[in-house]
Image (cartoon, rainbow, N blue to C red; front, side, top):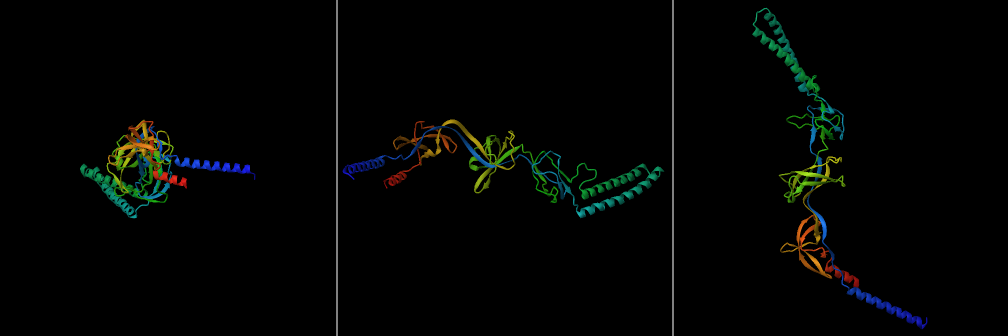
Length: 375
């Protein structure tokens, strides 16, 4: 290698070392940006109370039998639409042996009484026709005879009801279970062959079917005690369903429970609202839902992110820090309005040109970065 080449290599190396040294010095001497900044923006802010719950039919009707027995046939299925009077199921009566025997004995006694009354009637009628007995006496005999006939008819009807579930001349047999309202069958909790109990003063009876009108739905949910004082009957609600996440339904608050219920240490109050389903969407009973109850709303207001706001430890007044120079900030007290948990309205204290400190870095983080660069 000749002398000229050596000189060129030495010069290049010296220049490289010089440039590298200058870059390191410049890098270490350049102040780091400690904090990001943001400015005031225009936002639409709504203060909401969120209630969690579900959407259910306004009225659910349980169909119960008027006589005990066994389900002989079920004619409809869950989800079928019915009108009042449609036949849902039929019950086969299994009569109580003691009641059946008692009713049969009553029929036999009524027959004996009727036979005796007929004999008395025939005998006294012949005497009355001859003028032997008075009209009043004969009328009493005829009354007893007619009462005996009626008693036999009653006993026979009771016997037939106990044995078959209805009397022969009945227009609607108790064994036929029919819909009492128009709507959709939500549930049929029994199956053919199941034994059912009649509804009476001492027993609710077995539910054969549950029917509801799915065109009349309500939201039923719970609100925390800290929020319930802000609510008023008639407030608008926006319903979001878990199964129909892209759809929103309007509703109106119609009920606030006067008494709360404790749930996992927190007191919750039940609320209800009428849901508008006039759009034709099919909503199934029991969908989980959230209701946004708008307490206050303002459009196109000056706002900043609520995370930028700090509060004085003594006065509890809100303030932010505004950039006045490179990495230099000063405190500015502000007056705030409504908040939605993300943005908060700024009533005074800031302009749209102010650069507000974002609390995303600390001095310790910056020192760590400088140390890593030196190493």
